[in-house]
Every structure is written in structure tokens, then in C-alpha cells.
Length: 386
Image (tube, rainbow, N blue to C red):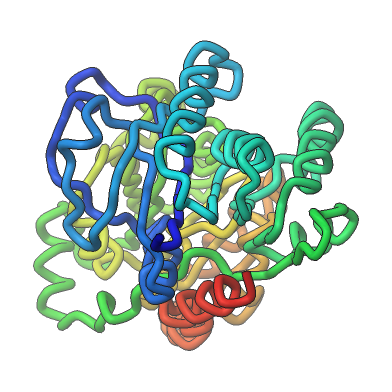
């Protein structure tokens, strides 16, 4: 019987229309290196997705058998999580050839390890940022840490994606023979990023309304409190530089509040909340500075994308960001609450074209360490050792 490999994770809440969709499923950047490595091992591929009719969904990339995992991001949605548990148990009973459960994210990680122990499966858990990071709330540093320590005992391989989590995980006790591994994120396919022509950049800048001499600052990500966009708007306002134009790609619950904040600060003409975009790469090439005021990260893909397009980065000095960028050579790292430092660093970058180019060039070299090919090889080594 062919050895089976199951990948599970959690996602944001979906609409009924999205849940009932039977549109083909394309492997995302989140799971791509692991699915690729498992496929190279010759394992039969299984994957959890949040679809009501998973048997009717086809994969666009691999031969994958899907099941309805019903795993979302709300850890306190007991009803949904119980359904997820029952669905996973049923699927494992129906597919006894599954020998490896690869679980990601907090809820997927809990379910995968509990069911892995129940059905005697090998368990690989990839922690995409422990919730008990430096500076986290007390509940994160107590309850969530306690849960991770207990579940580590059911884990054969614990993968961490930044150095702070790697050091923290050394204090855990894994299953007998278990290993702790460091893998630098899910990687980025650098073949998708090639320098664009100056004319393409000019055309895109004209399209988004930029005038000659204006400095385009860009951010990407869900508009949620954790991303700390309120600070970004304060920085733009405090800089008092009319040449700054700030573009935000993303949507979420903070959209209206941020729009009102921009109006109150008198910078509505400098702040552009673009919503979800399918031209993010083009917008990055058209921009001058990447701004990332986040409070918490694992290893941020948005920063990797910005570095891959040769942008200098102004980012918060938090776990993940510090793993990616070299402070002072690829951009600047600032304490999340230090408005004065953020403002000063932004003005330095905005007023020095040569510095921006040098820092952007440095990031183009640095991001090579996070190429998806490197991550695929690391995952293949880990799976071989299972």
C-alpha cells in the first residue's frame, strides 16, 4: 500500500459561496514546498481544504485527494473545531495508508497532533510563529506556551521558521526520537521576480496617479490590528512630507477605521487603501519604500516579496523581520512604538535616492537565502529522515 501524506492547516472564514465552490484548487505558496517534497518522496498526497464537496474538487498541480477539514482561524469556535476533529478522525480511519500528518498553524497544529497520537501517525508540525513571542500578552506566554509544550510530546518533527522560535523550541520535549528543525519559511520563487523596465515602472506610477518627484511607500497584508497600520498612518502624518504617497494593498476589519484616521490626520490625499489587488508585484516595482509596522510575525512573505523586487525596507524590530533583513544595509528596523524613530528613518530614506538603491540591491542578494528551491531541499531532507 502506497504511503500516504496528509497536509492540514487553517484559513480565514469563508462565505457559503466559497465553501460550496468546486473550482479547481491550486497549491498555494504556504503549502507548496512541503507538497513538492512529499510528491518527490513518492507518497500519495492528501490535503485538507475548507470545501463542502472536496471529492468534486480537482488539483491543478498534483494528484491530491482532498477532504473537508473545516479548520478556520478562530480558536474559540468550539463547534467548528469539533466538526474539524470529527472530520479528521473519519478521514484517517477511511485512509489507513496515511502515515504522515503534516500540520501547520495553531488550530491545524492542535488537531493534527491530537489525531496523530490517537491513530499512531508520524507528525510533522510547522510552527509559523509561536504565539508566545517576545512582548506577547500574558495569556500567550502562559496558556498558549503550555499547550505547545504538551503537544510537542506528540510531535516527531517540529519545524520553526525563525531563530527566536527555534531557540524557544529547544526547551520542549518531543516524542522519543523527535527532532527540532529550522527552515527559513515557505520560501519565495525568485524566478517570478525579474527586474522590470523603467518604462513599465513609469507606466504603473502614472496609472496610480503618482506625480514626478513623489515617493511611493507600499504595504501589503490584511487590515487587522496585528499589522499596526494605525502607526503607519501616524508616521506618514508626522513626517510632514508632501511628496510621500502611501499605498496599502489588502482588506479587512480595520479598513473603515483607517480611512477615518487618515481623514482626522489630514492625510487622506496621501493615503490610498487599495483593497485586495492582483497586481501587487507591479505595484512593488513602481514603489520606492516598503513600510511594515507589524507587531507580530513568523517570517513575513510580504517583506520577502518587497525584498525580491529590490525595495529598501522600513520594518518593525520583531521576530521574523529581524531574520530577513539586515538593519542599516537593507533598510531600517524600528521599535514598534517609537514614532519618532519611524518618522526619522522614513524621512532619511525618502530624501536619499542613492541610499534606497543601495539598500534595495542588498536585499536582492539577501533574499536569495530564502529561495523556494532551498526550502524544497530542506523539506525533502526532513521527510527522508522520517
